Image (cartoon, rainbow, N blue to C red; front, side, top):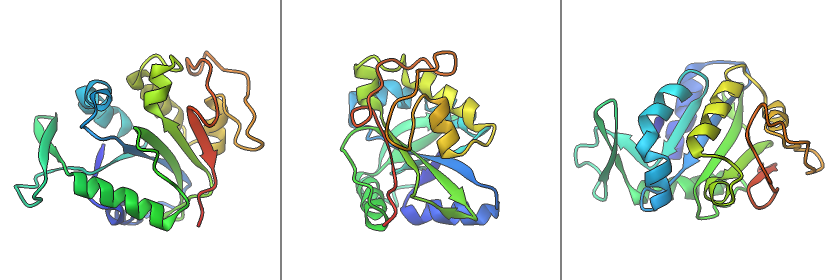
Length: 204
């Protein structure tokens, strides 16, 4: 997990890496004020931090460490490797606002995982996968958030594109139709486009 104090931090981090290969990043939009986020994400945040680092970058808007009271509305919410991480509602909201300003993405108000491609050190919005994690767990579509993330980490470790990733996850981006569920790849059941996930062109 990487802190994303503002949207520009993500862009700067991407450009700093100077990698010309197409890669996938994750943006996890999760408010710690909900029980779902506390139980399913913050309780396992150290695990996600280490596992995602082996395969892809996961950015965590509104969260960060070593703020030292520099952000007025910060609150301590979790620890990663014994280091206290804080959360700011203002930074969280500002990040979402900026994301909506530079793309056609619109926040649902729920816990969302966005998977986007980087190409030529630029963030692309033409093929974005959005998963609404609250609904997926509530409807029994996935066994748990941690299991779902673990499978994504394994898949992206091979450097898949968004479309090949979506096929592996039993989704089809073109035409919006479902593929047969590939249970050996990911334990997904009754996954519905528009209810549990979306793949779309958010280019403005």
